[in-house]
Image (cartoon, rainbow, N blue to C red; front, side):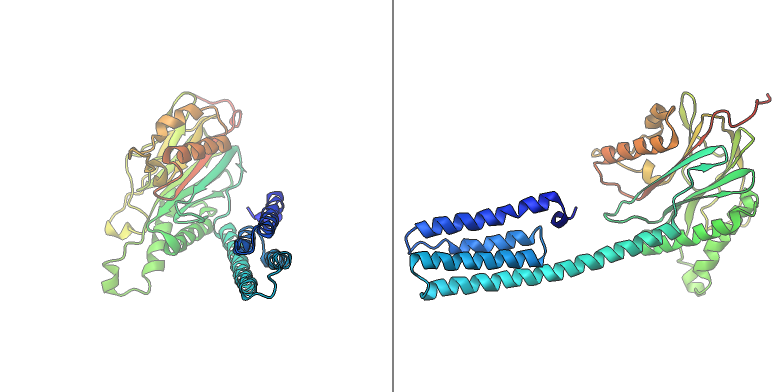
Length: 370
């Protein structure tokens, strides 16, 4: 919060003014050999903590003027001691004003950088649509690093005519390299998902995109140490069938929050993470299907959720906590997950965490045929 433009900031201006008034009155009433004037330098120093250079300079000038008034009352205007005090006060106030100027310049640069970062995030990692066919969707991203708004965790959605396709993934690594890899994976998914390939073909495309992008310029020696990969989960949810299809590439199993319980949807066959497909001669991209009834909520998440720890080092019990959210809409499920994670870890996540909640609306399907 910027105190300089807030009501509390305007109230804080009274503190240096009161300080100047108190020091001035007390110093004027004390004997000439007692000097409280040096305390006046606290007024511009305090002002710089919540205000800009111009108000700081004004307070500094007022402090110097007060010191001169004290000298006039005590009859010490011509003394070297008073002149040294006034000169010191002016010099220190000037240095504080210069500091304010540099600080404001850096704050402006930082603000511009944040605006650019937010624009980049909106382009690379746009929020998911709130609705897709009969589905309601909500998304959550929690960055482990302070002030960070994006990282190696990612999610995306695409319409394919009569179904919704979703991707959630966790790229190996942190920082800018992870963001670059995440952007590549998102671009590859968006370019291919709407063309309606089968989930195995889509997984092959994403795996090949990662391997080609990061290895096309590398030598044979560099390929031996390359470890660029991403765990991922691909989900296809038809509009008119009470099922969902998923393909797991080394990713944590999603959670199905049904009418009474919350249970993980564990695929019998888990493929290698994207980018490591060539390590196996015949990767088995097997699709698993599960019931997904009206009123059910599917919770996709990255391992940052499961690996969150409390003060004792215990992992976050997602399935146990989610059992209490069976009747909640997707946005409220993620709000409760966010609040619960922050409270469980005391605000210190060990890794980025992302989650997507998808709820099939009641009455979205016609009468079900058994």
